[in-house]
Image (cartoon, rainbow, N blue to C red; front, side):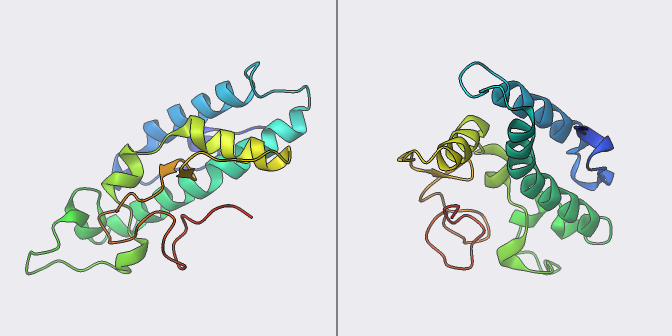
Length: 154
């Protein structure tokens, strides 16, 4: 069994300045998942939770970083400047937003997955670590739009 984190698991282009941040988040996720509150002795299950939590977020940041290599408007911060004459992104609804990066609550994200896997109710008003009802800079409202990646896990 192998567990990768940081650039070993998901190398980042430098165009979002998130490489080290993702590595720190990976380490934090492992710390939370293997804590007394969540770890029940099954390493494979714990690492599966780690993958479920980290893969979508790291992949989205990787993709945004690659896009920002050729389009400055895809970079976090610049992607909020929608009223400039030169503004254009590949997909407005899928662009990485400041809110996704800064409002993310990893504890809530992990609690959601752990509850789902254990068949427990998850009544927290968070989906994938973001507060339900949060309006992102791309117009997506967490939990409200059918095409949103911020729908409850099934």
